[in-house]
Length: 279
Image 1: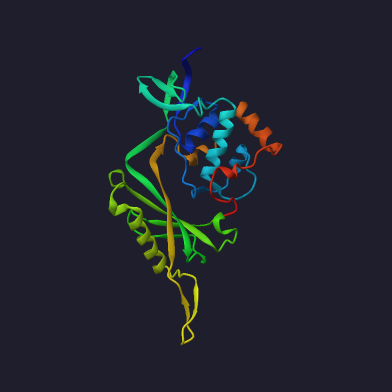
Image 2: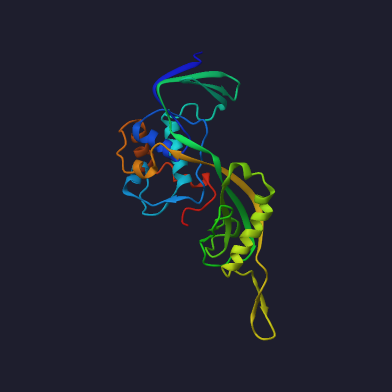
């Protein structure tokens, strides 16, 4: 069995931009470090998104588009070994890959484009919270200065049904890589910072009747940390704003996209990420 593969051109990346570049240019892509987008991050709808099956004039989640592109590119063979890579190392103009079955595969190319420039000094931190009291309000986002908890995103959670006024939240930070394990940036401090921001915004907990003076009373805001996610910061070779207007190559991935969405064989892959499509 052949354990060495060579290509004329190879995209090495893991970002949404690298997948879109591969789709547009019908180029092979090696996903060594998938850079899955933050689930709340969106892009505005443009007519060019019809090329990957979108028709509604709504904002598109980047994670949704990442799933769709990786699905299409995997089906057409443009993603190399999409689910087998265990570890890898780079050697000159080649990549040595160890698969899940401990098989050694060498991949080389005449031209290699390392599409994502990783910022090793910074990371994005996302702290997810269930809101137990104080989830009924009109806010979508709160902002604050500084790097730690500079944004609080509110979203309609499936945990509490489809009432759009009942919201959970995720807190966003952009901090130094060296600080990500520091207790000063831990989940407990994040919780206190979010509570402070919510209180300053006037968000109150559940109603608790009325005082003797007839003033409505409320319980304190209560939030519960569920998990933390850490995302790499990166800069793509070509930004998404320049990629979206480009006309794609009319290759196999183009024909497959037309067939899939013409016959409605797949949706927008909504089940692949947490948030509902109509936010």
